[in-house]
Amino acid sequence: MSRQQSAEVGGGEESDGGPGLLYMPFVVMEDLLDKLKLLDYELEFVSELKMRPLNRHYFVIQTNPGEQFFMFTSLASWLVRKTGKQFEQPQEFDDPNSTISNILDHVRKMGVTIDFAPSKLKQGFGEQAIFVLDRLADEALRAAQFAWNTPIPPDEEGQEDEEIEDDAEVNLDRVEEDMAAEYSEEEEGDILHIDDLSNYPVKERGGSGTTTERERPDHIMESHTDAEMWRLEVERVAPSLKVTVRVDSRNWRSHLEQMHSYRSGIEESLTSTKNQLDKLQAEIAKTLEKISSREKYMNSQLEVQLNEYRQLSQVLAQTKEQYKQVSSGVTERSHLLAQITDDIETAKTEMEDRGSSMTDGSPLVNIRKSLARVKTEITAMDVRIGVVEHTLLQARMKDRSKMQRDLHQSVTDHHMFNDSY
Image 1 (tube, rainbow, N blue to C red):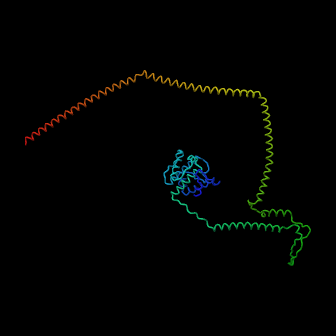
Image 2 (image 1 turned 180 degrees about the horizontal axis):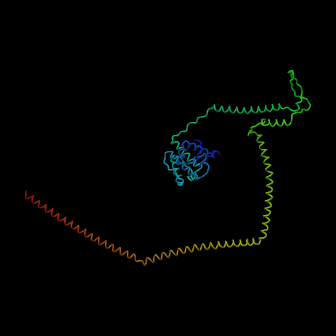
Image 3 (image 1 turned 30 degrees about the vertical axis):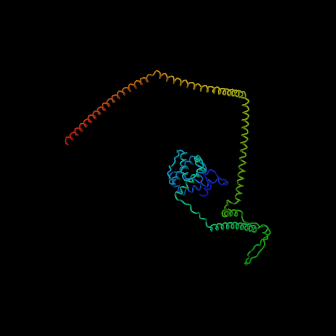
């Protein structure tokens, strides 16, 4: 985790840290793949969503931008859901700008600074895509409460064993070299020359059991064995005398023999092929000579027609140039005619509208209808006003008679009260 954070893949501005930073996206992509495996993406993402598993350099190298962009958005949405937030699974025909903006919004909410253009994520690969996925994977691991354990260094005993094995290998090589040197010296010492046979002692056993030594004779030794019997014996024993030698592929002698065999095969093939190529070259040269001669003959015979053709071609070019000039003038005049026609049509339409408005009596009819409607409404309003006045007058009359009755009743009651006292 530390090496990808030090690289700042998504920063967009790389510090001068040497040429190794060019290969940092490969390292961060491998770390991202390890984090995805820790999140069980093979079961929850690949199997459930029917996606292809990622390789170690999937988002580093461009292969298929459309497929890589869809894989990037799908993986980012899955990681966002792993952090405990809601995010819809993107589809292939969704708007890429809205999908990228939604993903970047979730990344910004995590506290990550985005200092590159969102359009760089449309490619579906590159440092920016790896940066976003790596930060989402870190957040998903934190949401899953995953913690990195302290690295345990290997035991030193294993290193000592490896050093001992290396020393043993070196010593074994030295022993093999020494043994090879001794064998070569022994073989050289065991060589028996034909000149030494004359001085080689021979032991013979006598009849009384004693052994006597004598020197080999100097005269020519001859064999009295039948040649036919010797040949039959050789044929009988020869299969048993075959020695199978295992060829070592690392032996330089076998390589040298192969080189010699290949060279001989190439030389043999070259001889036959060279003859065929020479014949083919001769035939091609003859054919080219024939073609050139025929071409010269046809040029000489068709010289008059060729001159006429050149003149006609020049005339045709001039005519085309004149036609272009004339057609450009016709085009301009056609545009002018169309504009004038539009102006005339507009003037005609205005004149027709004004004439129809002058001869049309429908506005007067509408005004008369409106006046009649207003009169009827005034009459109805007058009737309503009269009814309301009559109703008001009756109400006033009732109120007046009631007041008179009440006054009369009060006066009568007062007189009755005085008479009683």
